[in-house]
Amino acid sequence: MALREVRLQGDPILTKECRPVKELKERDQQLIDDMIETMYAHEGVGLAAPQVGVLKQIAVIDVSENKDDPIVFINPKVVETDGEQKGPEGCLSVPGLYGDVTRPNHVVVEALDRNMEPFTIEGEELFARAACHEIDHLSGHMYTELAEGPLYEMEDEHDENE
Ligand code: NI
Image (tube, rainbow, N blue to C red; front, side):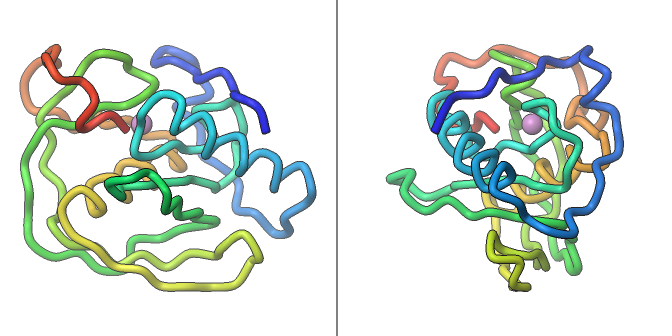
């Protein structure tokens, strides 16, 4: 495993549409391992492939307390949303800054796992926020497009980093 360089806002790759994955090759498995490691190294709760320079529909998230439960999304889709939450959101591609973003409070996501097996997962609050945020990355969208008001710094930046 290896850390990958995280692309920062302003890099045009972050605005591009990612290709669906048809087959997971060995190097894609390596990419997924590296993305998980990179996410943990930066204390993020999610990371999308374009953030490490790869235009494939792959994202990882981990909203568990102990950071020991990474979820891999291949070709993910939000298929159901419910409710609303507004709160601070951050991104490893926009280090040190946060913005207030309204997201659904509950989402259902359909995706493939790293064996290319379909699965459905649902969750609320931080999971819903992280899933929407990462899936947006796969179509070239950043949370900064949705932020209400200016971005700001926070004292404790370990909470909501995505
Ligand atoms: Ni992000």
